[in-house]
Length: 107
Image 1: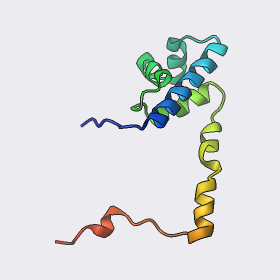
Image 2: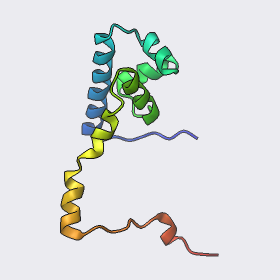
Image 3: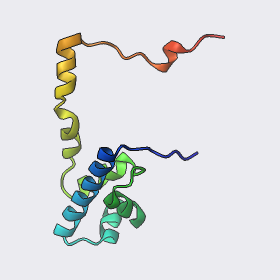
């Protein structure tokens, strides 16, 4: 079963910028999409989708591209700084997230 990710405009724009950044990094290294895909161990359409900012691209594809382009540590940097979460910790304290299982009745 395939699902469609519905993105807000600013989210779609962020994915487009991410794709453009990956493309620029690839071009700066004089790699074709096919060459990058080969080094990543994926098919060329995966690179095309990543560079186009398609929302269905797997996080693993992005991670592999960043690794091949020389930036595997950058994924962790995306969430390393969480000022909103830090502010919430200060204001409300840390709480355990309630899962869906908490709302399921036993039969």
